[in-house]
Figure 1 (spheres, helix red, strand yellow):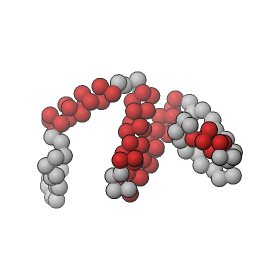
Figure 2 (cartoon, rainbow, N blue to C red):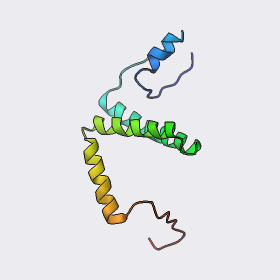
Figure 3 (cartoon, helix red, strand yellow):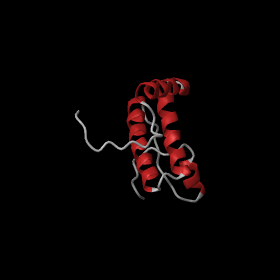
Figure 4 (tube, rainbow, N blue to C red):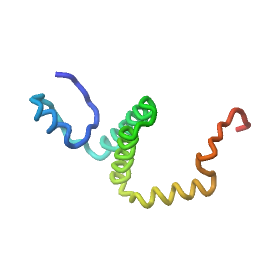
Length: 104
C-alpha cells in the first residue's frame, strides 16, 4: 500500500474504496488541518502553474482557499474586501507590469 500522508478531498476515500482500493484515513485536528491546507494550497498552485493555468487546477486552488477561510472563521466577503483594499492601494495585474529592477 502506498503512503500518501496528504490532505485529500472528502470523497476520495469513498472513491478509492469503490474501486476496490483499500485506504487508511484519519481526521486532522485544527492545527494540523490548517498546516495541511497551507501545504495543499502550495501543491494546487504548483499544479495550476504546471498545467498552464487550466480551469480545473484553478478551481482546486479556489476550493483550498475557501476551506482555509472556513477553517479560520473568515467569510468569503471578508477576503473580497481585503482584496479590494489591496487593489485600491497597490493596483491589480491587468497592466502586465514586470519589474526588472528597482530599489527596495
